[in-house]
Image 1 (cartoon, one colour):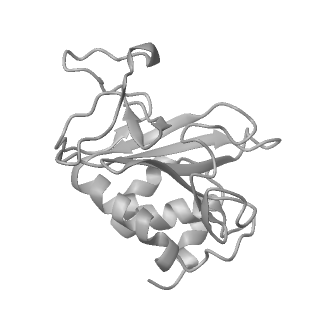
Image 2 (image 1 turned 90 degrees about the vertical axis):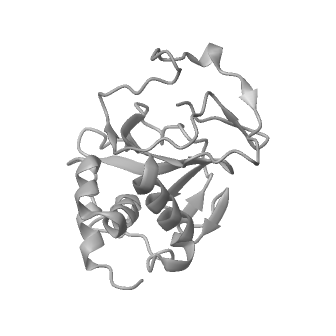
Length: 194
């Protein structure tokens, strides 16, 4: 799956109704019907057909944090659905671009852009019911996440706190995909509220 946005269109092939569990980093999911991975040069721009029932797909992404990337990374979600492709994350400054609710941002950066230290990695991908539940929680988080107006690098709440909070609302075991460099993820257990 390739996630690029161009005037509301998706890039790359989509298969309606895919069900499944997380695909962790290191596993490759084929993008074409014959099982081969498709390079970017084979991608074609197409607008989603409003009649298609495209199952959402949610990706957990991470990139090293500048200067401390060996011990810390920044996590965010990419949500791809029939409505389009969007990047969701908490940023260290409030209301700096895209659509924002305090420190929570949608489309502040392009979906696969790094955060200044390079090395973007996909940590996990969800499809089916888990992806639908994650997408619903991500998209409703501007109204439900109690820390939209608070940010503290350590111990949190920070970008990884929000990601852990979203994952825990669906299934706490999903937080394992974040890995040990997601500093601040443990702060999510202290957040009360809806």
